[in-house]
Image (cartoon, rainbow, N blue to C red; front, side, top):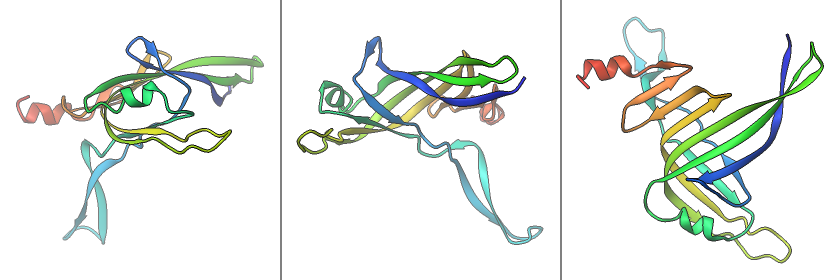
Length: 171
């Protein structure tokens, strides 16, 4: 079976049970915190990641117009958001197009609100930039990534890379 991943067919944005307006989402980069290791026994330097420690998880929501969603997400508190997507793939053996679900759950706090600009017959380019304190991504109902900054969880493909650290700390 040869499955070719194709594209995101469509997606929706939810805050609780309320569907938000038309937007584009930039998901966070997952970058491990690191420090330079050098000294005896090492030929040069290695930028060594710290197990389970993840840097900033910023998301950006770009709106077509100024609307109440942009102002709601500007409130200085945590916001629970869900991005639900449908992805298409092509299964070449059967010659079929298939659909898989992708769901991203975040708890995020606002960092920046860009109200955009007024330009006739154009979008305003308004946006919210937020920092995720919790991030979870499921593909077809299976959790692939779960990062919880305050609960000290770094779960990638079903393995919690921070579990033994929590145990060593007596947590």
